[in-house]
Amino acid sequence: MPIEKLILGIGDVAAATGVSQSQIRYWESKGYIHSEASSDGKNRKFSYKTVLKVQQIKTYLDDGYTLVGAAKLSHKRGTYFDMLRSFFEGRFVTMAVTDEQTQINLGTFDPEPDKDLVAERIDGKWTFKLIAGTK
Image (tube, rainbow, N blue to C red; front, side):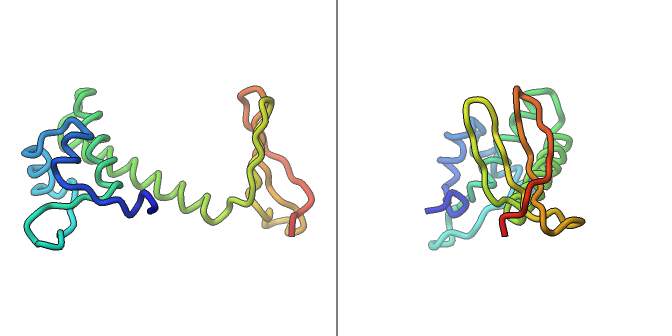
């Protein structure tokens, strides 16, 4: 089962994140997080993505942010991760990893369709280069 399909009860979310069930209910009532209806209609069920959001909000609170500030930062971070995921799902072709380097082929370089754009990490530094296309 893909992790995105994982659904947890409120007790499991509380245990996994260290956030009390009452806090989780409060955050949900304020619209900072959302649950899904369970099959019996009585219990709250939370997606894995929401569990991550609860953990992020808690981390920001622990760092001294207000709940409003923590929720805003968590939302912004979630948006960034959604965009990164969308980018990699659309562009990722292959990756090669060795002890010395990592190469990520990002597919066709639009200005030069016969070439692919490759991100390369050597000695902790990322660079980019064009190579002959794989298509």
